[in-house]
Each structure stands twice: as structure tokens, then as C-alpha cells.
Amino acid sequence: MKSAYTVKSFNFLFFALLSMFIPFLPLYFSDRGLNETQIGTIIGIGGFITLIAQPLWGMISDRLRTIRKVLLLLVICCTITGYSLYSTDSYPLILLFVMLTYFFLMPVDPLTESLNFRVAESEGISYGSLRTYGALGYAVMSLLAGFLMTEYGSRSLGITFAVLGVISLIVAFLMPDAPVSGKPLTIKSLKNFLSNKETLLFLILVFISSIPARMNDTYLGLYIKDLGGKPNLLGLAWFLAAGSEILVFSLSFWWLRKNKELAIIAFAGAFYFIRFFISAWIKDPNWLAYIQLLQVFTFPVFYTAAIQYLYSIVPVEWRATGQTVLALLFFGVSGIIASFAGGALYQALGGHVMYLTISVLSLIGTLFGLVLYRKYGRNKSTEGS
Image (cartoon, rainbow, N blue to C red; front, side, top):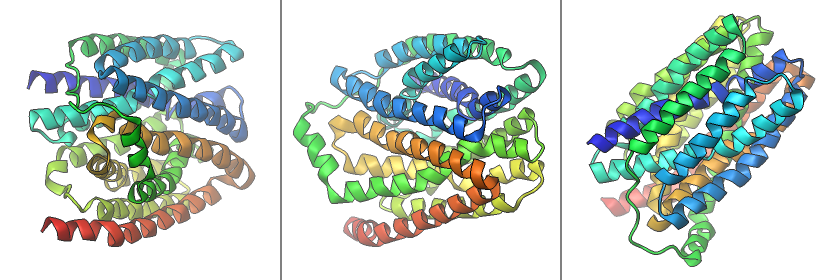
């Protein structure tokens, strides 16, 4: 159980780092005079880097049959680049450090999720019991980062990022490596996985559903700002969103049903639709922060079910790569489209139209999830009974 404690600590620290990067980066650029299209372009380029970095580091992890050693290297590098990002006034250097931080920080996410799932299996505990601490770290640091940025400016984020990075490195040294599969890696097994019709349809579902989520993540801060809110209100919004995830992750052993994952994903999609549709009509930034409590029925439900479903169809020896493919779609490819399209849409028509658009996309994802459940999920339920 000692390994579980260090993994929980690493989850807390890594997601605390992530909370200082994803939600506050658009606000950081906005304060430096960039418009929505420019912000979307920069973050979209970061998405392209993520597109390269996540599969690269995932395959390195699978090939070397280690997660911990790869995480150590990534944490060292992203600590340096993250601190530099919030500590320089040179615009070219800011752009350079943003891109480097994308390259080193974003691959940590799928590797950490893979570590969570493997340690949970080996320790006989639920995945959610580990991932809960990631939600807690994201919630606490979102609130703190919003306060720091409001009161002391972005330089305070650089110091905080560096301190958390160093502590994360220490914990990573103490953390066990993930149990590895005894099966050898083969390109044939990966081709079989990626060419399977069920797999491809599932990945399309993830892609459709993740674009609205990523667009909200990217432009929520700007929408709050346009409605008259300050950075500390964005911190509160993400504190409520991430904090609401804690109960969901911790009780995943109770609500997450095998062979019901596609139905659960559709359920989460329906609440994404409700959340974004309501957001489109809100005029008070405080209420926009409060509506983030609906996160309890969206991201943690969707992502936990998606991971379990993925692990039921991916060859065991390619799990880290499979997890990377999932993260790549949810945070990478969809993030690129969300950044570019969202920025252009936001600047041209405003936040109201953008949120109406992503609510429709969420509804499409919900319906597609129900179709897949009728085709695959119900068949598996019948086979299992």
C-alpha cells in the first residue's frame, strides 16, 4: 500500500501543476494584449506539439517498459520550462517556453493515468481512489493560482510552479514503477488494435465529445473576464469543477459498471450539453463559476468510463500507448481544433454563440454514444450474463 500513497501524492502534485498551465494560460496571454484568435493560434500550436509529444513519450515508455523513469525526465524538464514561462517578459521567450512546456508537461498526463490504472490493478484498489487526489490537487491549486495571479501577477505562478515541480520530482523518485506486461511488444498487436472497427468508432466518439470540453477549458477564463470577472473568479470556477470530481473518482468502484461504459459516456455527454447550453445564457460571471459544479457529471464520469473501456479492448502490452492515444484525442487533436476554431468563433460571434455551438456538439456526441452502446455495449452485457 506504500506504493499507492506515493502515487496519490504524485497525482496531487502533477494535476496541481497542470491547473496552473491549462486554465490560466489564455488569461495570461489576454493580459498581455493578445486577442482571442491569437490566443487560439498559440494554444493550437501547443496542441500540435502535444500531438507529437504524447505518442512519442508513450511509445518510449512502452519500449523501455518503464513509466517512472520517463516521468522523472519529463518532470525535470517541465519544471524548468514552466518556471521560465512565468518569469520572463520577452515575448519570443514566452512563446518558446510555452511550446517546451507543452512538449514536456502534457505527456505526463497519459503516463500518470496509465500508472494509476496499473497500480490500482496490482494493489487491488479502484482507479478512482488514486485519481481522486489529482482532482484534489487541481481544485486546490486552481483556487490558489487565481488568488496569486490577481494579487501578485504571473511571476508568483512561476515560483509556485517551480516549488511544486521540485516536490513532484522527489515524490517520483520514491514512487514505484508500474507493473509491466509479460507479453512482448509487437507492431502487429498495435495494428490489430487500431484497425478494429469497435476501437475506431470508440475513438471517434471520444474525439467528437472532447472538442466541446476542450473549447470550454480554453475559453472559460476569457468568457468570465468578458462578463466582468477577475482571475480569482476563474480560480474559483476551476476549484468548484475539479473539487466536484473528487467524490466521483473516489466512488468509481461503486458506480462504474463493466460493459456499461458506453452508456455511462452517453450520460456524461448529456450533462455536457446541459452545462454548455446553460452557460451560453448566463450574464453574471459568478453564476458562470457556479455552473462548473456540473463537472461532477461530465469529465470524471466520461474519462473514467473511457479509460476502463479502452483497457478492455487494447492489447495489454500496448496499454501505455493506448492510454496515450486516448489522451491524444481528448487533449491533443481536439485541443487543436478547439483552440483554432474556438478562437475564431469567439472573436467573430462572442462567447454566447460559441457555447451554443459546443452544446450542440455535445448533444451529437451523446447520441453517437447511445448508438455505440446499442451496437457493442449491450452485446457485451449479454455475453457477460
